[in-house]
Image (tube, rainbow over all chains, first blue to last red; front, side, top):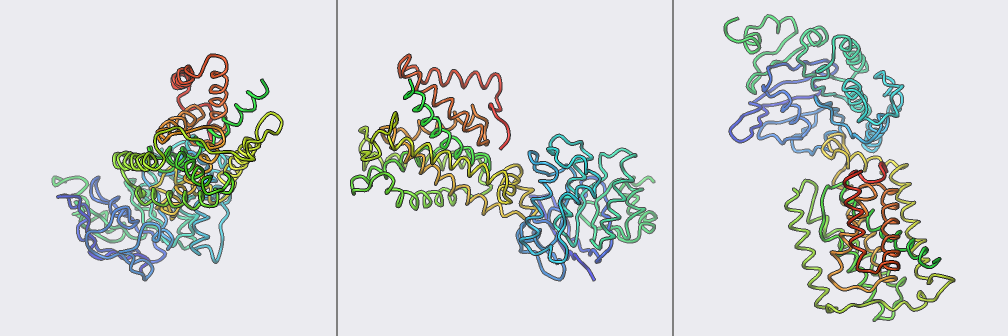
Length: 240
Length: 275
C-alpha cells in the first residue's frame, strides 16, 4: 500500500526540466531515501509534493486521494509534514509557539482525532525541552532543525518529507538526529528523506530512490543502490 | 496645563490606533498601502454626512462600520496574498487618488468639521467626545493585544506574518488571515476617522497627512507592536500638543521629523520590540 504515489510528475522552469516524468511510490510505514547530486531535482520534487510549485503534468496520489489539483493548505491538512534544508520557521515566535501553531491546524483539520499531541511534549521529544520558550531566531542551526521536525510532527502527519535534516550537523549531532528519525518512523509515520550524508541514510532507509538531471535513475534497497553503476556514476563521474 | 496634558493623551491614543492598524496590515502583508489614510478621512466625511442627516457622531457608526468593512474587502481583493510591492504601490496610489477625488467632488476642498452636539459638552477639562476616544482607544488596543498574545488566531497570525510561505505549507489559511486583517485595519481606520471628527477639522487632502502620521507612529514606536504603537502615538501626541502651545504649530513637523531622524539613527527598529 503506497501512502504517496507520483505518476509521471514533471516540472519545468522555462527551458530547464527540473523533474522529468518521475514515477515512484512511498510505501506505507517505510523510510524511503531520495538521493542524487546537487541540482538533481530532489527539493523541487518535494516542493511539488507540497504544492510550493504546481506540476506541469503527472499526478500525485496521497493516501488514495488524487491531490494533484489540491492547494498547499489542503495538502498539509491531509497529513503531509515537511521540513526544509534551510529551516523555514517563524523567527519571532518561540519554539513551543512554532509547534503550537501547527497543533491548531491539526485540530481544525481533524488530524488529531485519535491522539492529540502536546506542544511541550513534542519539543521535548526532539530534546529541546530546556529551550522551548526561546525565540527561534536565537537557537542554533541544529536546534532550529529539531524545531522544524517537532513542528512537522505536530501535524500528526501520515507522511513526513525531510529535506536534508542532517545537513550542517557535526558528527556528534548526527546519531541523535537519526535516532529521532527512527523513532518517528516507529510511530507509524512514513518517511521520505532527502539526504547527502550517505552513511546515515543507507544505514536507516528501507529503500532508496536516486535522481539525476530530474530523472529517476535507480531504485532499490540501500545495498542495491551502493552497487548500482548509474548511481555511482552520477556522484563520482564516468571515470570511476 | 492639565488640559494640554489630557489633550495630548487623547491625540496620542488616537494616533496610536492609526499607527497600529497601519502596521498591522504592513506586518502581515508587507504592503505599504498608500490609501490607508484615505480610509480615516473618508470615515470622518461619513460622520459629516451623518450629521447632515441628523445623526450624531456615535450614531453614524451604524453606517460607518459596514462601509469601512466594504472598503476593507475591496482593498483585500485588489491586493491578494503574493501581490508584488510595485503593484501594491500603484494600486494603492490609484485608490488614494480615487478616494481623494470623490471626496473633493462631494465635499469641496474647504476645511470642514463635524458638529459635535452633546459630544462637545465639557466634562471637567475635556469634552465628552474626547473621553469617549480615550475609552474606545484603550479598549481596542487592550483587546488587540490580548488577541495577538493569547489566542490561537493570534498565534497563527504571527506565524503568517513571520513567514507566509511556511505558514501555507503547514496548513494555515493565509488567505483568510489576509482578509481578516484588511477588514480589521479598515475597521480601525474607520474608528480612527470617527475619532478624528471629534478633534480636528479636515480636508480631502489630509488623508496623506494621516498616512504619514501613522507611519511615523509605526517607525518611532516599533513596527507591529501594540505597546510600541501606543508609546509612539503618545509621544507624537505630546509633541504635537506641546509644540503648538509652546512654539507654534509651524514647528510641529520640524520636531516630529527631527525625532524620526533621531530614532532612525539610534534605534531604527523602533522603541519597543515584540507584540
